[in-house]
Image: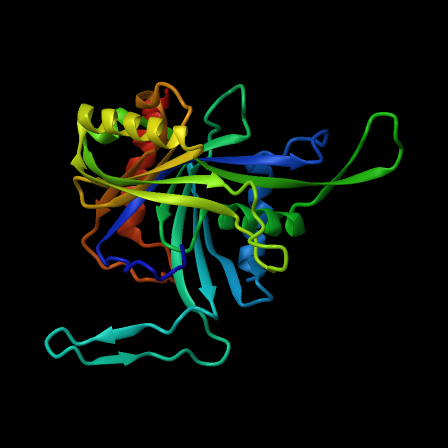
Length: 319
């Protein structure tokens, strides 16, 4: 999804429950725990060097603010895209529009908060931490993970000695940010409706013709369905799985709309069993009393309070 395909509301945000991980490269290097890398990342932010650029510099991710408290770490990211379409505004009564043009060197920008629990989520796997991510179109989990990995490769790179070797080897931390899958499909179907499906299969004979410069990546079909929920929706999904499986489709996307009017796409394998128990990322809508800018320059205090509450509840549920 591109950053501005969806209008961002001023007074509300969706919060996603995630697992934040600090891995290492190479695999036999010493562990890089969160506490070890935070001071170096903090220094990088203070010097305004915590920036990750992609697409020949047209897109950038900046860690604009890093706050470390007794129990949590709060990060504020700014994402900017020089190639994004200039925003257009329309007068509601007349329909008259105007476009706000970017200046040289500017990019359309959005921001997102990420709050991480400092204490590891498991004593057995101390590299993982509970985290809450503000969901903002354009700022994906993968972009954040890639951006932080890039920043830490610069500021937290270290050396170690492999057994049997005298030469020091370079090592660095690697960040992962994954959804905390903790809401069953059966639960989602009780809190919303399904509107249809899209089925996919990889193209086997993917050359369009002998002389063509194009190849077919995949094939898909769309199935339209009446709005259903609960057990009826689950039966409809099973019917759709069977129908597309017979036609050699391998993936099924479910078009889902929650009771809060939020649209989601849920994906299942057509050969998966017990899909009622399949887990999906848990998200929740929160509202604040003060407007949230499309691109915050500092941590939004009211939103931060709501994120901390959600993080506390997430940690409590996993105890």
